Image 1: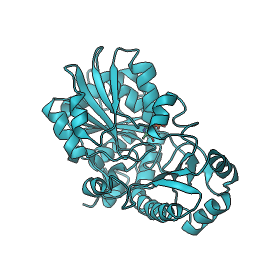
Image 2: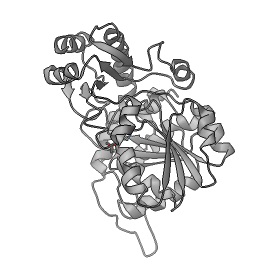
Image 3: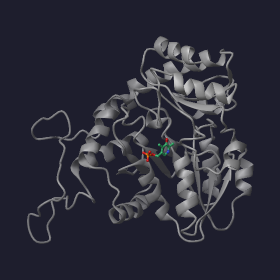
Image 4: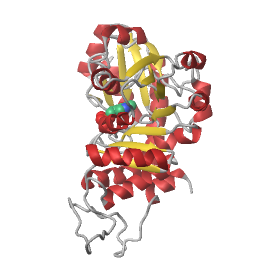
Length: 375
Ligand SMILES: *Cc1c(COP(=O)(O)O)cnc(C)c1O
């Protein structure tokens, strides 16, 4: 079955009423039929039928043994970090979602983990950073906000040969365009708030795992730490995923057109979009993913131009987040990456001229007209 069909019909149950959509089981707990007996559902922190439908769907879309649905993407990543012990070392990409960097710097380090951040375009460099206490490699591809692409199949060979977990944040491309598990990843994390929800109206997060063994460990953490997704929000994400394919294809075609338009604008210095053939990682993208997504970052000629643009846009919102039907623009330096230490940020190119655009579903001519007047 094609992935676009799975988005609509994946994990369809046999509802006795014939209901086309999964019911919202808005309950905290479940009655037991007898002593020592269970319907399979005991308490909604542990399992809930609506959430389970979504989790099976996500496992199917990512090709994993199991998927766990969380209240936010950060809740998913924070729970995943509980797999590690004091003294463990993790190699992470040096261009991650700012919230992940904040989690690692302020909480994981306090809990005794250590991190080395690196560019992953040269994988021999990554290998040279592996120490006896290294346990995992954490990567986002394409990365946020600089749009670096990491060769996941090659990285997974390194991870496997050193017995490390390969963890991939697949928020930007979603399972519709990229399946990290098929490329060798052990764990895939998502902010479901973004394309999976698709409507800028629900927060959610996921961990998808390759092996039943890891699933069992994470289920124990999930049950214990408790940041589960509510039945209603699970239902909203299921509804969002039904249109994932058509949204992503349209958002991508808008993004390709906008990236080309921006590239030719005199007030734009540099456009970072993985779908442009002159992007340095274009061939890796084409090799490992089925699409380029709809995230663009670009550098304007001056700080003044950046600030003016943010204040003048009318149709596009100046707002954090991404992936929804509404186009959003962010100022990474102040917003998503505000807590990343300045030296780290500047070295990456996240400066006062860099803006990040999540291209939505509006008509392309209206988007271009809005940017044109704002520039
Ligand atoms: C938004 C985002 C997160 C965090 O997810 P929330 O749902 O906001 O908690 C993690 N990774 C990436 C790539 C994101 O864009």
